[in-house]
Length: 163
Image (tube, rainbow, N blue to C red):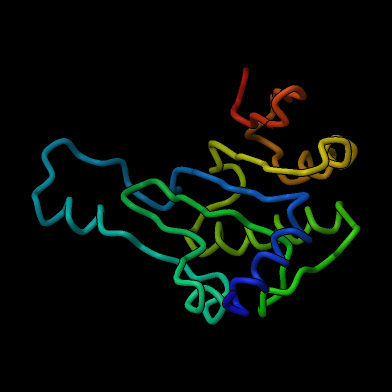
């Protein structure tokens, strides 16, 4: 097995308690006009990639985030350092802080804030720890995602606004 793949699997296992995947509308874009030209459409619909950890991401052949039009898709975020080594092992709350710090860098790159996030998927191996540390998320999301539904049976956290 490739050493990089083995290292990534180890990092994922160690940080699997918390994995974030997000989708949000870009806040720095003008509303689209109905009568746009083909050139305008191609320009705004062209993918805008963001490498959070460039060397690591180039090694594995992926990018952490991509914007197409006014939507940004962010891949799974885990608590790792620049070399892909797990950080904050056995400290769930610190892993959450590390993940949201990475997310903050991505949001700022696209000129956005947490208020622009419209969907968050959290994948965890420990729902009890997620529930115990959920108050940290309230510090992050002050305006959006204010109503959350937790489905304990399926182990999923639906963070869409359920207002």
